[in-house]
Image 1: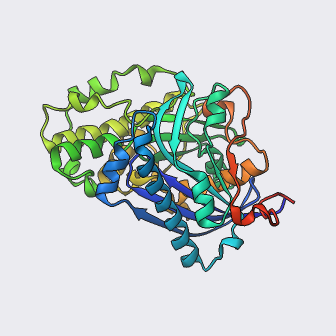
Image 2: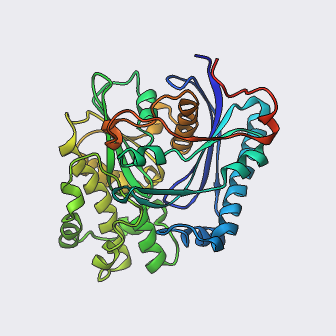
Image 3: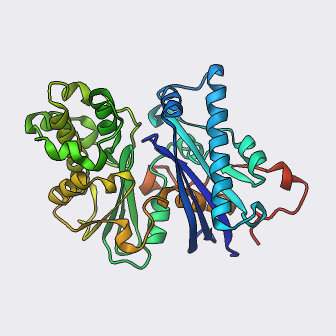
Length: 372
């Protein structure tokens, strides 16, 4: 199949900004990865976006959703300029949008963003709404990057685990025959960020410094790990705020001890995931913002008792990886290839998905995004 050039856009549950990346793929193989960038949200807008979490959007939210979409359009324009590409050189944008509510047990997963507006602003066709078809077919709707992880790891020694530590943490286990298993392991950075925002005045523990200065409370950590989610077999997935009650559990701790205990919560919950894997990974590769936290990485190495490296050790771009994944999935959607599998989301059979929004600039011309 002819390779296509895609731009992937991702705004994760950490609510830190927009990742944008260029990728060339035929939907099965990664031909090349190109320029990437991260546009950090200004704090006032981050607060506006946070106000959308946990509920369906209302009419009063339209301005926030429009502004979010225009920020994505600006990210695309800046990426094209950095890459020296024209809009005509890009076949499709994979637009994940911002997840505001994820309740697959109720048949709900909501990502906001105006895809038609993005297509009009960029002059490029847009694929969005990646998760809805999976949830409608009985799947968890997450995690959604495992097929990209498997494509990246095609030549690596297995069994291997790719651990993505964003707001929520998820893992992709890749076996010796290319078989994969994926699920959310537990909290990622969201609880740490929320703790720091509530107690430290800023929404993150930069470089894990506060956690490094603190002492984890084993009794509190045991209470946190005594959550029925960890006893559920995969497939399983989480909403960003599913562990929000954990903040009350650590409320009696100091700022530093709370940061240490919540960071250990992320690491230990990842270690619990090993029990569900068909064979223990010989190596863990970490992507997402969590890989930049030295304290978390040290705790992961201790908890996992296996080699743990940031994905840059394999030459991958950890800042761009999730955005690349949605560019990859956009091409798979155009070619009606599965985006999820029974072993990644629990959907009954391999499931494609995504909704195409044609750019008005292309609607009456040649369809550059169709496979040949």
